[in-house]
Length: 182
Image 1 (cartoon, rainbow, N blue to C red):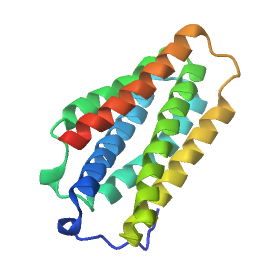
Image 2 (image 1 turned 90 degrees about the vertical axis):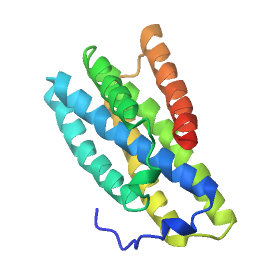
Image 3 (image 1 turned 60 degrees about the horizontal axis):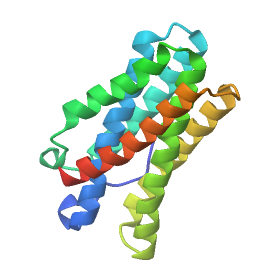
């Protein structure tokens, strides 16, 4: 992704925005590791192509978000986000493509809502238009990932898969809370 976005001076960020950016950085780190987890386990070539393509996008997002947040403001829990991301990709890969696609649908549904809250706040405050543009681009990519996963998965999801996706959604919610904190 080639962006005309110019980095904002993080020192200008109010505390709430710095916390949001820390959670975004943690989330994009986790997303990179989700796709690495998928690639380490899945042997399904369609899933592997899906994961490779999306991994490139997530690595780009991580680079963009990293450029907006000083290293000393990154979450102290980055090793946890890497492990959680890896397991979130690797575990469903053990159960096949439908589990992978359902997991990505659950993750990206959460991420789309997470970014939208930030975008709406930046719009309402008429602040940081370049940063808002970056977040909108990231959100659009995440929504595309969600839609691709929805299109690729089969219609049926058993109780275990629905439970897993619920857990992924709740885990994402609590990960944001923890990342915002530190």
